Image (tube, rainbow, N blue to C red):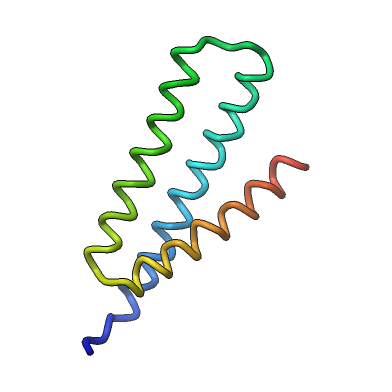
Length: 89
């Protein structure tokens, strides 16, 4: 079994957190557009941006091993709770 350097895991956590912040803020924006009957093209574009962004970052994380992916996903979930707190305030 190969070991993964701590710096790689820290970068995976930060990357997961960063992509999570962007993802959940875009999700918040998408929901607001739906509620305001916003432009359909913008809503579809936001869906596509979110999906592609998460897919690319998680693909890069999985290239460094399953543990990096797991740590990145933990960062992603931490961002979810952070955005929920920010949006509620």
